[in-house]
Length: 272
Length: 263
Image 1 (tube, one colour):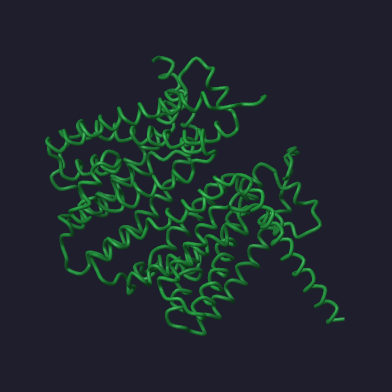
Image 2 (cartoon, rainbow over the protein chains, first blue to last red):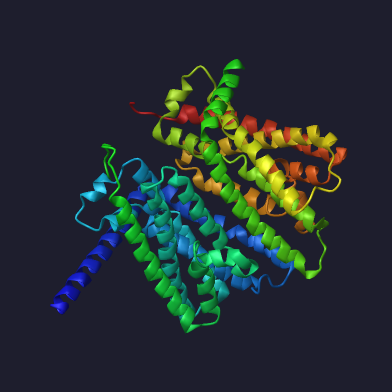
């Protein structure tokens, strides 16, 4: 009996992953219709990210080490931040529009689908410019120092970071089930996560540091992975994995709790 | 002229109902300021009291004022609405109205940002005075001159944004160009002053929009001189004329090129 249940769960997970991959594939194909826009989005995003190298080059011309990090290590911070953001925006872009879906009653079409509602919602759109972030992230890794170990850890932590970021954005977005102005709060929280992710955690002290490892978990999504890549630490590694599982479960629970309060706007629209 | 004043006034009144949105906007501003405050305190913690001619107080005031000019005048309508109007074909409804679309967008934008900008100035000044203390040598008699450069800077920034959005007539989505403009102003002109860059780059940077949009007005607040004021205003007037002429020319060419089906 236990074995059958396990098989059923595995098949469900496999199916869900298949749906996510297909969703990503069709989202990209749809955006590729206009090739100029598609390419300009990617190339300009790489340039956009690279512009911050100027900022850090200037800061490092004043001091050789900032917050215990050299320029190469700051590039690793940027790499993790960009990849976290990229994976989240490639796979789960609709999470960032969740407040609009909830406030304006646009969840109807997802509710009638035979798949997990939460995953169907968040995987239903893709931000193409995120491909630019992804490319930039791996350029940062190459500059920092490419090795198989670094590549695996970098990719793994980018995935856990993306899941943490998406979960935080989703929890903030789900608040719209209860609060009308939740969209502004969700937007602010997303921006806070992204802004803090690109600076060394060591320059922040006291209460802020505690907040960055709890309520706004940039510390676990970004700072801790950078430390583990530089100096491997098994406890920190397991902590990141455990926290990722915990916050994902929390995002699911809050979304489904809120969904019970959802009321449709009877909005007619085509879902392409 | 009266119709444009009316557009400005009606947008301003409309925005009065969105005060909570403005208040939430302070969260992002506060976070950015907090990060830079920490960063610069760290940079100055090594005993180096002056970096590129700036004390820590002057540097934080510079970042604070430049961020006010940046955050206080940001408007999604300006960057997205024009692109959306062009992409969706809505531009057709605006072309045949009894006003010039470019003037309409400028007035609407100014109406959108007025309350927000004033609120940012008040909050920014309060933060600065609380954490760093008053700006040394600042005199209220210089305020009218500074106000002129700030207003011109805001206007030039708006026109440059419109100019970028108009690219949508040719490549559908102008957002990537906005990213680059954003980063040019933010990374080079807001996070730190031009003076921090190597000497050979500074003259080049003085020809970029950074000088007329953020650096010029901000530097005048921190260290006012009549000669600098004249330099900034002349540069701003030249920028205004060129960017506005270019916007009108490109807009008219774009309208001739556009092809809207049905409705």
